[in-house]
Length: 318
Image 1: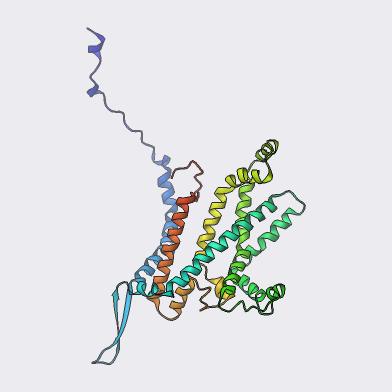
Image 2 (image 1 turned 60 degrees about the horizontal axis):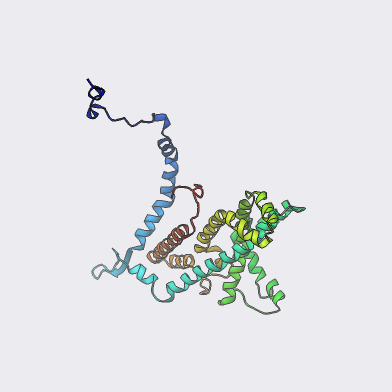
């Protein structure tokens, strides 16, 4: 009898069973149980208001007088009338342009100044701790207090006009009001960029700069080839956070320049103005449009620049 005939047929061999982890070795279920209270709180604090605002944005209320009783009757229906009012003429284009221009110009200036601050704070010099503390002071000041401070600076008899030798009414409507908001926002939040970039600089090994110096690389070449690529993850996250913050900006222009100023009116201010006039459906439509706009910007930014928001690293799973 051959050895081949003694071997059992393949169909009689049971398939290997998939190893099952014991109940205690499943970290996903444990993590879900531990995070469930957080998810419930986020759903109540964030999820429900967002859904309620979206529902209110489609709700249209019409007032009429009952001819028989003479009482005021409010009829509620659902439609796109609130969004039509939002996108009508300059009512949306002006706040949208102001919001976008603030985001582009302010964030660009903050990135340049923040990187410069980080490089200065990263240098080994006497009194470095004092320099770091002084740089971070503007970021620690509340936004309302910062707005009042810069309102005094941009007063008609303030420091800005004294330095420029001009008589400019900064709190009046116009380009100068827009510029004052950009300056104040850059002064306040550039240290935030600098703080995150400094955290990225401190993890770069010094041996890389020494090797570049031995190879004859100039300081600019070392900055462009070593510093920027290695600090890019922290810088991208900082820019994303600042974009999201500026796109919903309300308090600084409201305190510094004031309400109902067309040159500084943002989408958040337009929503607040509609709510103040008891047009809650239109205000909710503004808030919904702003929410979708911010979400689209964040999604596009993450897809374009690959911001590592959950700490998976360069080779992480996407």
